[in-house]
Image (cartoon, rainbow, N blue to C red):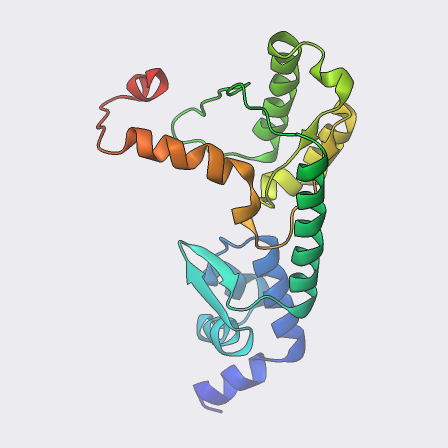
Length: 202
């Protein structure tokens, strides 16, 4: 049996489903990790990702080249729902940031520190936006793993907040992408900072 034949045999429907499941669970997963997890070759994983599943890698994250019909329908439904809510009620705070938090160097956002951040946000809302919590808090976040973890959802429920639906593969629908990050990038463009303290004071 040659290597090509081995690869074809490994690209079974069950392996295709398993690879797709791993990628959807962690879009930053490495090809080597998939191969090791499923006990198949790296070459086979590459073939399944690109030729069978139609994935491409953008900015170190695997994303589908095309949304499925189900994802398109869900995206349309959620977009209409969110648009309807915008027209009926205001749920974006226009008085500036409520909480500013910095991670220690070398750390990344995970479910533990994200849940701690949500708890801090609740305290800051109480101190900076008195009465707001009695009117109800609507939280909009994307589908990053720390945001969708079971512990995170439990924390949001414990806080009594409403979680706004977010369509699959739609980071562009987050308000912060338009109203916060864009302005922040423009403001800091061309500014060179030497230390982390300079970043915090900006």
